[in-house]
Length: 192
Image 1 (tube, rainbow, N blue to C red):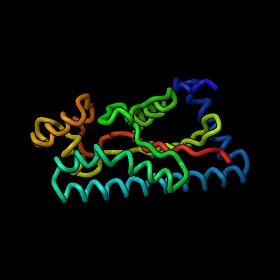
Image 2: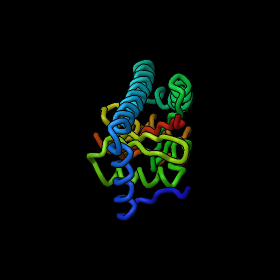
Image 3: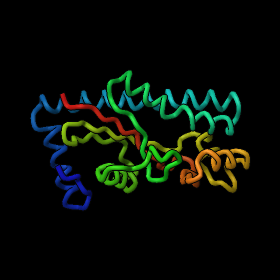
């Protein structure tokens, strides 16, 4: 199946598909709503778990320690959450710190572009081949985020910036301000 590209025609087509998927019958509408609620719950739990761990690392040793913690533990934390929920959880962005969080599929790139263009878009549920894929917006919502992802000249301490450059020599994940769109939770589940 060819990936969906988000030009105007495809946005109209995608909207019609989503409408048909969610409203084609009351049974499908209920199924869609339940699935979206389930996926949102997983994304929210994942966000809380990751923030809890990063906040603990921050309190333990400041931003330098937290950057090192994220380097080692962010992916294993999402992997363990994936296993617990029996889905594939990842965070994706166009400006990566960890290259594993990049936009790899054409659909991911197109959906990401839609979120960037529409600041009111919170989440999206799509079908992709034999998978259900849920996306949820991630904004830089706390001052702590800015201490590692803000302006390198005024928000990030020199020792933290040095640690980032050491661990992530190709880092692109700085220059954000508060409440700016940073990335997406991406949760993939097999269709049953």
